[in-house]
Length: 343
Image 1 (cartoon, rainbow, N blue to C red):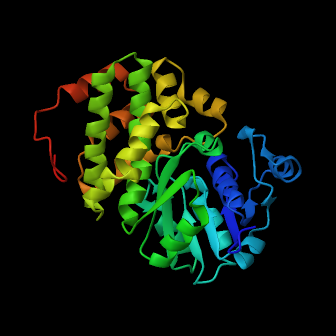
Image 2: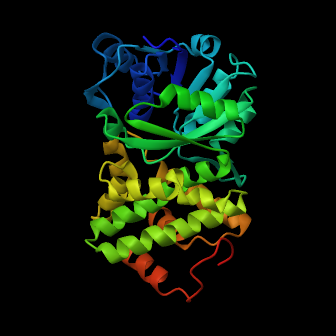
């Protein structure tokens, strides 16, 4: 038994939320995992498996599934929020009724909230700050595919917060012989890298679906990182953050792995499947689809040029053929390679 064991809350019973809960439980902590689906709660509590998202991976017996947010808010000093971006505000508002100002909220959601009609866009830490009284807010992000984490394969992640205590306690809770947890104070950079890499992962799926080679893949990743960095810097991020785990690390992982949902969506679109059919068949959120719309609107607001994001937006929402999008990208005017702002 861990002599420093805590009660820890995790909100969200998808593959990543379940993986975080399992890691915490494996480290000896008592975990309350909040999720709405009754049958999934039952499978976790009786058979210690999430048979909806991770049926082949047993979950620590220290994880208890619940639908009681009040219990989590009142008993858990640290709460991990692993809710899809479109649902985060609603859950955060409900959680806000129970948490106190000194509790630690760490989100692990790689997306951006978008009110397209009002041209208002929010990072997840901003949503948590608006809907709760908690001050010690942070983000957990990095190249972390849930199935590989559950299999115990070595990995690393990063927690970012303006509050050193939030970083320290997250590291203490999660670090293990198979997981390195690094700290960073650049919340904006870590959030932007985690969210926008999903757009490039969609494009990487296109490249794979079209049967294109390594030259194209390398071009996509490096130029994708360039426009992610441009957006991050425009929002106040440190450009060096994007050379870390939540930037190039997550980008490489998500763009190369068929386990990535966004990669899968891009590959299937390139093969001619309809977006609606793909999303319906997956049963899980591919954040890149919604994030593309948010990033396009945010780029327009800030005057940040993001040609790959623009191309993916037109493919998803304006039915532009992939071949036409590729041609438009390849025939842009020549320009300097190394930059953080501008064109």
